Image (cartoon, rainbow, N blue to C red; front, side, top):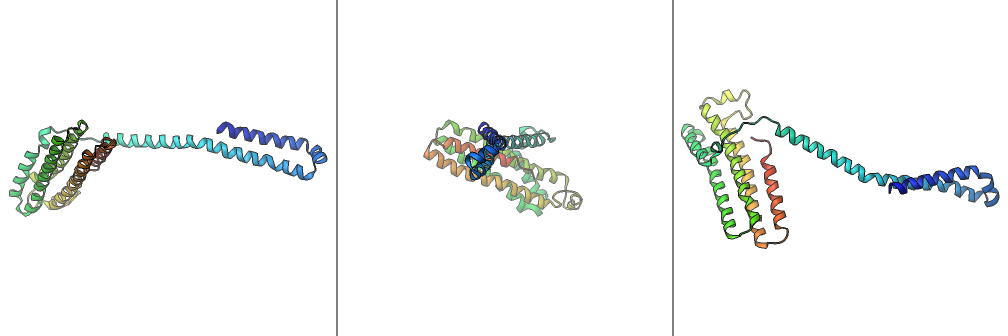
Amino acid sequence: MKKFGFGLIILGAGFILITHIAETTIIIHMGIRAFTVLSVLPFFTIGAGVCALAAGFVPSIRKGLATKAEIRQIEMEKRVESRPTLSYSAAAYDPSDIRRRLDKLKKQRPDLNDALAACEAQLDTMDQRKAKLKDLLDLNEAEYLRTTQELLNDVEQFICKNFRKIINRGIVSDLEDDQVFAQDDKYPTYQELIEAVIASNQTELDNIKKFLADLAALVSEQNDNSETTLKSWMQVIRDSLKKEEV
């Protein structure tokens, strides 16, 4: 397309040069009307050449914009990955230990009994989701389903990591300590922190519920797109887990 456009532009320029040089001869032998037509025609040719040339550059422009967008995305991911993080052992996110510590907090902070009970209920819900997945895996022997167990483990770790924030604050605070945290904390009261954690966890639990429903339908249908659809769903959940933490 680029070569064609350049060709038309050169051809039009050639016509302009010829009509300018042979203006008198053309008028004498072909008449003024013919000369007028020949004078205008090269400009149409050049215009068509410019359009063809521009069309030829469109794919390159699109590719360049896509490359820039990809570079920006990579840079953003690098900035996120470069944020300082703390490393914990697997035991730090052990659900049974998290549950035990939440129960201990309920005894220390009876005023937050209902909110902390809601946290324990979310751990129960996560156990139920994992049990449902196990039943699906036991019934349907599809190798590509094995990675779903790792996904639910990641969600469980995300939930336990959120609960650690509640437990950590509970260790160092008493009934009157909300005034201390209110000075510069993101969640001035302990109740607000717990509510934020519950809301964040519930989003992931709801995602898992929808995921399991679609998974049941996919393994029942066993069509050619099942594996691709499953991987897309898993990526949606993994992306959700990367969001800004509470």
